[in-house]
Amino acid sequence: MTKLLIQKLEQIENAFYLSSVQVRELAKKLQTEMTGLPGQGSLQMLPTFMQLPAGSETGTFLAVDFGGTNVRLQLVELLGRGQYAIKKQHSFRLKDPSGRYDFTARETTGEALFDFLAGQIASFMEGTFATSLGLTFSFPCRQLAANKAVLLHWTKEFQTSAVVGREIMGLLAGALADRGLAHLQPAALINDTTGTLLTAAYSNPHADIGSICGTGHNTCYFKTKEPAMIINMEAGNFKQFALTAYDRLLDSNSRRPGTQLLEKAVAGRYLGEICRLILLDMVEQGLLFRGSIPALVRQQQTIDTSELALLAADNSPSLLHIDRWLAARQNIHPTTLTDRQVLKKIALTVISRSARLVGATYIGILQQIDPGLQRRHVIGLDGSLFEKMPGYLSKVRAVLREVFNDKAQSILPVLTGNGSGIGAAIAAAVCADRQT
Ligand code: BGC
Image (cartoon, rainbow, N blue to C red):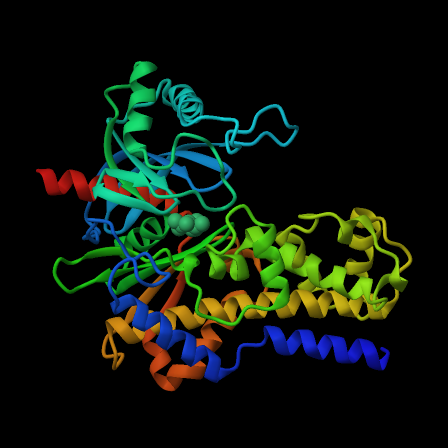
């Protein structure tokens, strides 16, 4: 490596490194915002009117998980004792990869989107019986009741027209009625973080935080102070941390600049793009790929976050997997070992910052809800970063230990796969129990 390259890498690593002091500062700022007046900070702290389950709820429910461009329908049977079974499931995309339709685009209306959704539900329900529906709708909403919520604004680069400001369950119920499915009772509408917390709490009474780091990022927690309920923090909108020049560029290229800054620094929708921007900077300075700019680096959104997992996990001596990936996927061949080492380092740098930022937010929440860490806390986690990114969860655990030392033993972050789907069924059951 040349001196210039080493200097540049150090500069990048320093810009992305979150020291212990910065972790504590971030946690403190987040905690302060949690107690501030609603609407004043960058956290939205949205009431959900949702309680935690007892674990004994039973019944069969249709769970609709609308979290991103992939929607999942599941027929979930809750068996009590924290157990459940998925009887049937079907997933579909809102954006056709071959470009035939895109229900996330500005040109599409909410009516068309929910009619498409209802059509999929109608086919799914053929030969299937359920009377109650739980919807997970993973966008910031003002909750009017446990089964009614108004979309405040889109995130995750969605742009569908005529949905912002509308009551979502009403849109879905109307579209279902048009298809002869009026008997499906809209029992609950929740955020995916709430779903994850409900799922963790269904089998573990110590669960009081739920968090997602997948396409998007967000966290919720159970507020014990009256009125006790789950609060959807919309933590992805948190802003009080240091941004790098790459974060600023990414933000200014995004659909809603200035919003969701934490999400843009930690979530799957954006991490690949941050890496691309770093690579572009390095190539432009003649530090990588012998200064020639490959299409991979020139065009926006060419690196998927799942590919960062491959870069970060290549432990072969000559970084063979990275070499193959560059050749096959990016048509960059031959590459030098230095090029490949740089790629790996950048991927690791961006991933580590994400894990430390996310961990720092949990520290702030825990300090707020249980300052002396007197109780046990289970944090339900879902999303591709936790599930698939090598070393990610260990880094989150490490930052908790760094700040809480031995007391970190009372905090248990657990993977709660499919929390947003199962959670919709649990929410429907909790609401049904409340009415009887
Ligand atoms: C949304 C949240 C959601 C998170 C994870 C964010 O973009 O604003 O409501 O929980 O993504 O899906």
